Image (cartoon, rainbow, N blue to C red; front, side, top):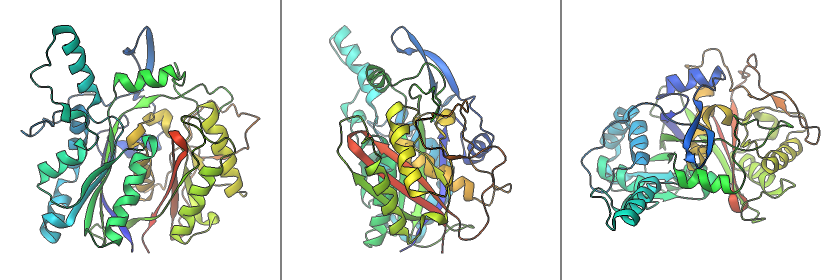
Length: 397
């Protein structure tokens, strides 16, 4: 069954709606990546934060986290599409599947700090803010939806898995439409955790360069309206998805890229495609030593003739639980009819190739997406514990 991606709401360091995000994305704009103090003790590190005030939360109890505010911003962008889907299918036939790794942890950590100092929690603290299911509960309450609603949390593959799970709800006939995507907000716990792993760069990240030295963290919210039938002017769909778990190490990827390759191969098989039919690959491309090494090996093996590819993390930051959906959104924007120039996200780096890695075919400012229909784009997401997901977004058949 075709899973149509009818509408997209997105907010990240690149912009506060899909038009702003697309404009910054295709221009290779890294201005949203800014050095900031206060996240990690005695260090200033680049973060890709959403700037400016966020939408006021509706009067729902236990829902007042920044994570849910970002999600609300994305949902408001497609509220008209959501309301039309509710009118068409009914409140019980629309599901919600989201990915997150932070939920309301930042508010919870501040609440605990307040308790340790004053021996009581602040008045607005509620432990349910930090539950991983909170984003789905918030959307269901706000929109009065009674279909399946849950959150997947598999670190940096969370929202890629959410899209695959949403498609299964449609395939099984449990839903007629699903709100799916991901959301993660900046928080000290996350930044200090990656800092403890010595994985955070003090400069803008430099994926696949010989000089790469770690990640930059970002925040984002992404929400697709997925359905069994096309509801939008231009049919774009999730054509396929593949997942693997090589369980190599708690934080390091399997060095040969075996698990990453398996996820990409399964996505191609699921979509009924061959590697030569992929017109662009959005790499996971975190700019850590181990990820970039194993991913380049896997890509080189699957695409011996090469494929235009890029890592977009110097622009958006690594948005963790939201990354899979955000980078699927970048593919969606590349396919959109609004992208009249047929541009692709450029690979932003210092162009100093690592001689130890197979050379890849980098997207530049002049690279254009070939218009041979159907156009098919791939997006990779890899996570701690050897958790690997690859998605294929393309023109619907």
